Length: 235
Image (tube, rainbow, N blue to C red; front, side):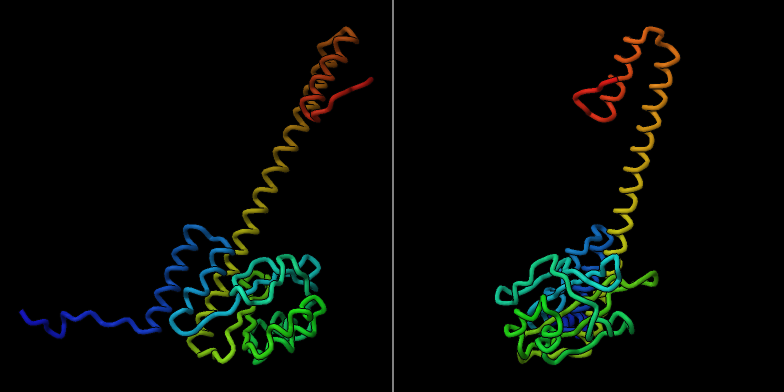
């Protein structure tokens, strides 16, 4: 039986493929909202349109004036900038964080020379087009996302739109990670306070119930050793 027009499956376009990949990233975020998973998805999302040379995520420090490299995904010949590398809030970096709008750099090496920590890697990045995206939510800015392409590659509007969406995904992943860390820290503090109060209650009970001084010291030592994990207690 001949195939009719309605039976034919449309051939996916590059745009369809990009949005399909973005949908996959969103689905993965629901299951495992990690920063690393989102950053490492960039290459797959953009693979239908161009070759991505690198993606670097810098996160603001507690002082708000410095950033450090938290996560990256890059080609083997990309500059080997180490995780933890700190840069200052100057140049285009400051502009992105203040305006919360992406900035295009035709040659990222010029910006790298402004940062002493990145200057040694600038010669390797000459001529590489780069976009710097703000990583922020409605709550606060968290840092920047630096996306670099191979020489001769261009950022088309569709890519910029997708990268902006992915930067938002990264911000949500960061916010979730920070919230999770805060919850774990609070839980540890609650447990520590509970154990401290339990020790004080035990010592108080020993004082009330142990009439012999040596027996009191032995009981108190046992309680203190349980809490502090110490090897010796002297009175």
